[in-house]
Amino acid sequence: QKEVEQNSGPLSVPEGAIASLNCTYSDRVSQSFFWYRQYSGKSPELIMSIYSNGDKEDGRFTAQLNKASQYVSLLIRDSQPSDSATYLCAVYPGVKAAGNKLTFGGGTRVLVKP
Amino acid sequence: SAVISQKPSRDICQRGTSLTIQCQVDSQVTMMFWYRQQPGQSLTLIATANQGSEATYESGFVIDKFPISRPNLTFSTLTVSNMSPEDSSIYLCSVSGVGGYGYTFGSGTRLTVV
Image 1: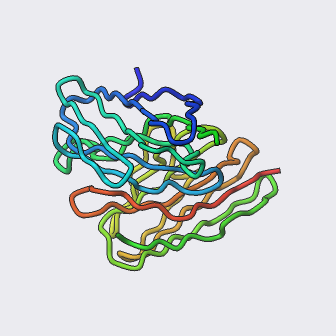
Image 2: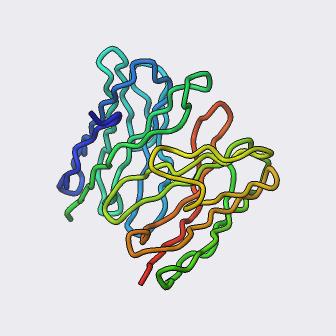
């Protein structure tokens, strides 16, 4: 079983619509959760981080975390063609955890169609 | 967040040769990480580079194949040794923020082995 799972997509979204990306993780003690955006041929870029249950909004992005369900999501409102990229979910167990390293999901490819 | 300079940005190498990738950070960091991203795949951690001690390798990666140096708190190198076409990937260095938050990535090295 993969530690961090994402639907690989592609998730096709019309311009202006909301893109909804999901991520589940297996390690219940995970503390920190990140969303990275990766354009083709580029390195990952951190766009959102979330550490406590609930929603966190930053511009057109909203991250949602539910630790009881081991689930984190990313909403992209008013999607633009420039949002077309692969979105990587990453989970960090905490500085005191054994093997305290960032683990990535497989990524979800998003295509925003004009 | 830290600024990372990684070079070379890309290279085409003959099988059986070695390539050393350099990663320079603009601030002192405790841990640096080396990732591999194979075509169409997510990121896989190769090893954690610790200053003053040997690197810690993940399962499936060995020092003889991927020797790492970490001479100080701002610099690290990863060597890909005795290359084969299967080593063709993007190699990324990364550093963590305080408490493991918000990993930042270098621009990556796109390696093609022919």
